[in-house]
Image 1 (cartoon, rainbow, N blue to C red):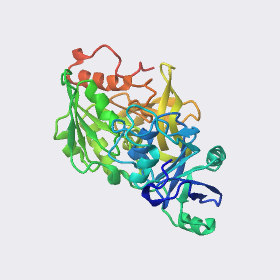
Image 2: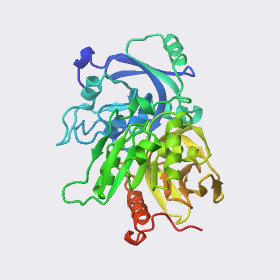
Image 3: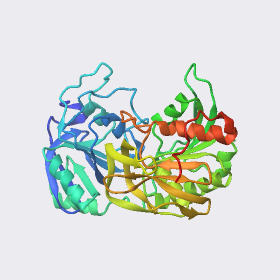
Image 4: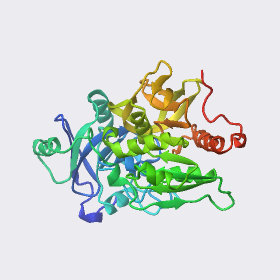
Length: 395
């Protein structure tokens, strides 16, 4: 670890305090100071740079369950956004040096550079088990506090994630366009609503011939449809979907216009709300790159990347009625039967709760981008489909 960057002595003490009173002592990692947020754990074995820069982690303290973090340093190619979004970072054993030909800085240097407070502690397994049993909760990391009870008072005064409206805090302020790479012809124009979008998502669409116009989270259906897109995408993002009324209204306008629609993560929850379904907070959520999800029709199991603390409450026993015709749950999580996908049967719209664009992986579900392209092709010209089913066969 860096010894004196940002003014902190090497291995300075740090403390982590949870809202239920449990606390852990460890070493400072990253910037000195104090931070508060909802503490969650991520079971990914790789991809820490993508995790740190994922806007969906806004206002969350992330615990990494993999024992060694930082081995490949930080580069300028892999971030999912222009900054680190996590509120705090908890690791067991941070790498003392980085070793990768693309590395520009060590992870410790990058955390210090962006002012992200972290802690290295031996008890990440005990902490993870505690969160799994008690659920995600508010917490604080501090390199300045010495009294855990005083720090806990500040934790208890901090806002909860339930009821938090955060998409507007992470979205782009101005529209921008991502075009297909050189040599790839433009086939479709996609309007993507940025609720906390990851950079890899428009890139995956562009690779398939989509010109993607990314719009701020506050975009209305009228503004989206004014672009005359071939399809509309609603992204991942942070916060409680119960607060995202503007995005829900936009989805309903897109459904009314019968435009092909694809949603990921937060976008899945927003589609659920637009269909009249409820959402709820999970006890500790799904975060990592090793979550098994089953397609309810094909029975195929994908290993998928997740980052969500809320889920859609939908019937699992077959199609149900909505204001937009019949719909059904398309995917479920095999660990806990949580809804992992929705599909309309009478309109061109579907969504998944997980991340088919996942970087650094897995890529089991990348074909969903092909399904979206096929949906757009079929909508504009039924004879133009590639032959892949845009949606799994219906029962």
